Length: 513
Ligand code: NAD
Image (cartoon, rainbow, N blue to C red; front, top):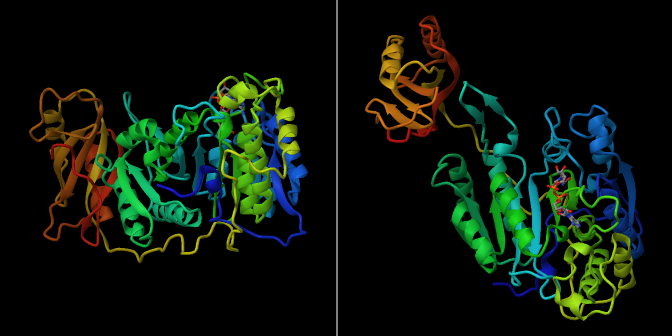
């Protein structure tokens, strides 16, 4: 499928800012919690020894900040550093359990518009044990939308809801980024994964945008897989894949699966790319079980830092570090998490395992060396684009469509009545403008003509549609209906307007409708 080796392709040349050769580039560094400070110290030691031209500014994030009352784990002044440097190298943090704490990662990604999570997953066989020696792929995960909006409500005694938001700009940005990434990094195929057989409007939009944009990249092969079979194939035949682009939740899940398949979560780095700021990190967490022992593998954070160096226009330093790291693996030098698995460990005379800092020193000793078994890494000088932008506009905002309201879904909380009895009660509140058309329970039509076998909760979606000749209603018509329902003692939870956009329905039918 590809000509280059995996190690050639671990770069993020799509998004880059360059500085003159002798200028130190300010970066923001967060040392994190748990093993964070240990692996960050090891990583910065390697970067310094390799001659990375960086001027780190340290910020505090994570547990300490949460406990100091910052609900997102970051102090307000730290944002100033991020806005100034536009680059964050971040060690993992611990999110305290219990309510009231917001995920720092999600906050940073969304506040700074880091729309693309780029996670290269590569096997290093035979030096790192893996059942999938040919695994070599990049997951480009949408990073801001989907079920991660955090808009959740309890609506009735029995029903809880989480809103899944998928936007056209969000889809266009991530899909275009995936193709631009593939083009810039010599990748040959982009696979879209979604669940549009079920979520026809939200995941359907993601798939539709993929189909629209892929024709602009004729040299790149494309396909689409439903996420369930896609994930199954990924777990059994990862060589089928090159670049995968997918919405947030699916990407979250499959990127951990793919990283684990390479031989361990300690090995992978990731980039979070935005139009203004980018964040680089390891994919793993703060590993509290081994914190403070100096045994954690710094490789994930180091490879994140390698992606950062390409991003800030220092590809030669990135390649130097990456090649030294590969040479270190080839020499059978491992931290405890990889010990005993790889071929290298068996043939080396080096006492194992190495601690985090000894591992960093082993990489430093090999700076300037090229690996013998792995193909040496060559990072290209990235095009001088503003950070996070691509050769084509990330998205184009289309003119607003003509929107017409043609009805309303009224969500009702009630547990006493059957669907037929509820319908009788609701029909008594029909207005001249809006008539009850259908009732569903958890999406399944239960009136008219429901099945007695259908299990019903206390949460009913009651669809009222326009009775006028032109099929349209006004907001006042909806308010009048809600007034009538309230007068009749109906417990209305919420409403969703039924709209058409340039005459195309903007709502799904009920299952069985
Ligand atoms: P984890 O990734 O921290 O650890 C999972 C397992 O992998 C543990 O056994 C750990 O020892 C091992 N491991 C992880 N990184 C390693 C490394 N570099 N070297 C050797 N072994 C390593 O996941 P978890 O235990 O589920 O989460 C711990 C904490 O990390 C939680 O508070 C969680 O919220 C947080 N977390 C943070 C991030 C982040 O900051 N990006 C990501 C994931 C989890």
